[in-house]
Amino acid sequence: MEKNKRGSLFIVGTPIGNMGDISARAVSVLSDVGAVACEDTRRSRVLLDKLGISKRLISYHKHNEQSGSEYLISLMDGGEDIALISDAGMPCVSDPGAVLVRKARESGIKINCVPGPTALASAVALSGVEGPFTFIGFLPDKRKDRTAIFDAFKSVPSSLIFYCSPHDLLRDLDDMYAAFGDRGVSVAREITKLYEEVICGQLGAVDVGEPRGEYVVIVSPPNKETPTGDLLTQLQSAIACGAEMKDAIKKVAKDNGVPKDVVYKLSLEIKD
Image (cartoon, rainbow, N blue to C red; front, side, top):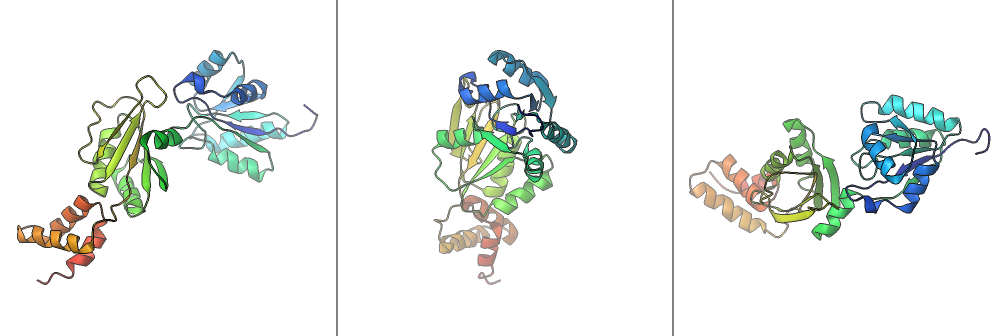
């Protein structure tokens, strides 16, 4: 490497389960850089050992993105090439990295992408989903924050893609059903691994068994096929059966996968 030449940043995709998915270019880059920035140095050490690569590892995770980015940029300013990897898949996709990429670009550092496996693209391919789709990623822990996200995206005319940890899957599916109603859903798990599978069904009824492994959940777009006349008829029927107006609105919206405000506007046509 020439003296005083600035180093470069390499964003490197790594396997999400199957070691055979590592690319020859990724191996070459990881072998050549001065250091590797990673989420968990223990997990990344296992990966590099399997590849026969001995490299200095630098901890870079969501809790030290700011300070970590500044340190990594100082290394690249000094001429060292840095590879950024996550625990699995592509960095910056629901994993740390975006802060470093922005700061590197602001500093004029060359940024290179070494594409690799990602659960997002793999789940789309396995599920047979046609575009458009909207990637949301992991949901926040607080219910009000999850609800805010659902409210913001429930009327978007595209499939919605979420990442779910096994301990959050059932909670998230219940909340999705409460927010989106009876929409179609596909649940992919253990992608590229031995027990890879995709379970398809309807929100509120899909049977995912005992959650194990990491999941990608794809929720179908809102049903645009239900005429407003049918919604009004359903609303009138629910009220005739004794339901309060607000409960009837909520039920019709959930049953048809449409926003509650759409049904509310129809309810204004019903005279007291």
